[in-house]
Length: 188
Length: 168
Image (tube, rainbow over all chains, first blue to last red; front, side, top):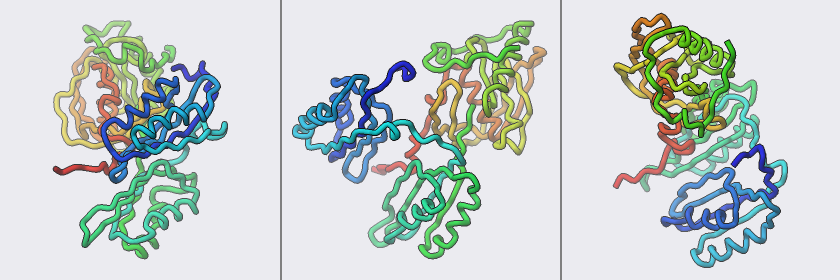
């Protein structure tokens, strides 16, 4: 599909959550394919015993949300997966341009409430934009360990070193390890 | 010499193995200049392979000396014909992008140290021992000569940094 030539008229965010089983992606994309929708961007992963899909879907012709909704209702009734649809506005369509240093922040330590909140609040207060985030509870029942991995873009004026220093208080208060590393994609 | 247009996938030349260069003649000197000029014109570019500019010959240029990833050791401008990796060591992962595959990056595992034998612009056989970012750049450009894109080598999804694992 040549993006320069095609003006998409309709943009939707589609969220699907289902008890995990083989065929969720195929079932979902079959509906989209039959309707003539394009998947512009997507991220899908296993979460616990569920499989979660988030897709940005477009259509080249005028296309109503209710038509999409009707088609998914059939799938929902047949397979039990849960679908949520949202129409995207003009200003949500283009991705925010990545500027500034990309870094990976790894946080891990004994499980306790507030790890994700405290770390992400510190980032938000410093205008650090998170681009990806994963969390996972590991370890065993007696010694549960919480792991948070995220990728974020540092605004100008912040460096990997200053970001790491910013977390010094949190490291002590939460007794967690917080590492900050540059990723910096290389153009070859 | 003019800066050449960088071909982007799905141009078929990018998936084709390039032909060996028999000898260095004037056309090879022109090709080398085109590769160098095209590399220098690309923002932050540290290498170009001949198939990327539409020439299916085993030739590439690499120069990481201006890049902040290559502070340690580098060999400046390398112009290589028929390069072959004769030994390699170690491995490291770097997030790579490619001018022939715009708007996409991915984590690729490469050897940390490589020894490469190649023919230089005067037709002499040379050997270079590269490491770090220079080694990564050489391996990426040499892949183009075999019709391999970094997409063929992605080792993890961007969110797969701690992928769930079944030990059973």
